Length: 344
Image (cartoon, rainbow, N blue to C red):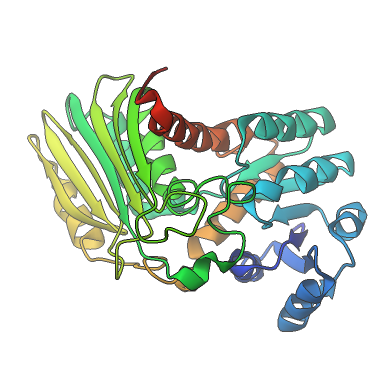
């Protein structure tokens, strides 16, 4: 069994999740950390008893790693990703892939040129309930889908925004680009592309930040279903995230990782088993404390990436796929920026 050696660029909160996830996998090994500030890399290397590099460039050119995980601030994903491609390293990048579409395109091009893999982290796709819902939607169990929505009423204190979070140049947005993008990715993954969008954004609970802390959007999908997106970091004390999809033959409601409604016109014997297995709320991580998120689905995300490389098959969240959620977020911002309605 090949052991894939992985280095992590960045030493913030999400780097801990990546480190724990890597260490849980039998065919992956955490080699070390790099950071723009060397003391950060040293701190994390001591915590996990691994190596630290003086710079991310040193890490990327090192023969000791096969895969680079990018966990730098969102607006600083492009540079190390492109540099990694030059040294023949595969890259798995934390969400969002980047904050501008042209920067994402350059990342994709670099890895296509070097024939290396570029993938994104959207760990909610690896919840078992996500795949159960995906199967129901794709098989037509809901009939004509009429409405789909995500709600992310989270809370972040002012102290959370003392660093790069909430800045235009590094975060690229606020509650929607950072916290809500996971559920936005899930929405488009299940429902397909959006045809038109209207949106409003505001900073109501954290007036000192550069970006929004609350946003709402009304959308129409290409399949003609209507939908809404609501995301916030100004909803004290923070509530569970919610996904709802309803149609002419059924309704699904997901709260955190729990199926709270699973009801169809045509019932199947497996429905009771599904409700019994997935009907209890699990999660809550990230509602008010970003450090409380579990690493389990990150591990599944990484394992799937490694499996794609080993088998020479496309990774399910490659650069083009990870780009979709960013594009939708940016469309929300454009719609809120005086344009109101965008017809795609």
